[in-house]
Image (tube, rainbow, N blue to C red; front, top):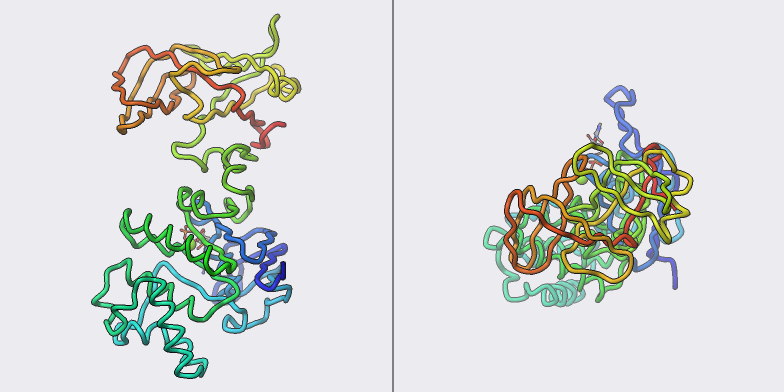
Length: 376
Ligand SMILES: Nc1ncnc2c1ncn2[C@@H]1O[C@H](COP(=O)(O)OP(=O)(O)OP(=O)(O)O)[C@@H](O)[C@H]1O
Ligand SMILES: [Mg+2]
């Protein structure tokens, strides 16, 4: 594949400075990331982790402190935003209020002195694809939030950039509209095949839209992987606790050697859990005998149906239950606090009730307490 839409970020650092050029805050500490032509890459992470700063450096809206950014194999550090072959869609899409929808979309092409026929054909085709073709003479004030967001998208699309940059473009929309626009952007990506870099703090958006996801924290990359790998094999405690809703249960405890093998023994006196560490987990835990460890299991891997394989039944006390119709999130008391189980089916569980659940131990991840990294 040609690399004309690839984006290469290398040892990128951003330190903000004050009016006198004194450093104030390093928002991006040192990140390297390669994005293939046509790839949909999501940058996700909590507020303040440096997502927008990174995207704005790719766009050329923010000066780079050190490192390089290449688009299509060419270093763009010193290029103006308009010369980078990118188009950016922001959360705050700022349409021109006095212009019709047509002119809002055509504006960039008019500035670039494109031919009139070309402009009306391009805007018409794009508006049709976005379901806006019957309202091209309306002003933004006569549009719904979702329609305005689509105009902002259209304005980026007509410029046929090599790379689309999105910074939380859906966060001003209500929940239903967000889900709809999410699938529209995914469809658009499938149709256009352009490279897209999409910033969000919403891990559901990240999981449903990204070919790959880059999880960031405090100006650093914590893991880059496709959604399922991220879900199944989190590299560290941060990713384990960030991806998934509700996130992975993380229990503190120790590895103990007993007569019949290795065990994870949860900390705490009352209702502390104990699990055998067999098969894949045994060699992994071997180096941690009598040491602290974090035992991670997802809520959906704690069920009330007997499972094949290495699952273990445990009876626990129900603390809180959140019935959601087809499933319930049940908080169960353990040695160090609560554990959330996702129980399928229509049930009502009550405070203090005893519930026997199965732990699917082959799905467990173990983490080093000090490095916070997964143990392999
Ligand atoms: N001009 C600035 N001067 C100093 N610090 C800044 C400046 N702009 C941003 N920051 C800081 O840099 C960090 C990263 O900001 P950034 O906007 O990239 O975060 P983000 O990941 O996009 O967060 P959010 O999800 O809230 O949009 C934040 O701690 C922010 O306070
Ligand atoms: Mg931001």
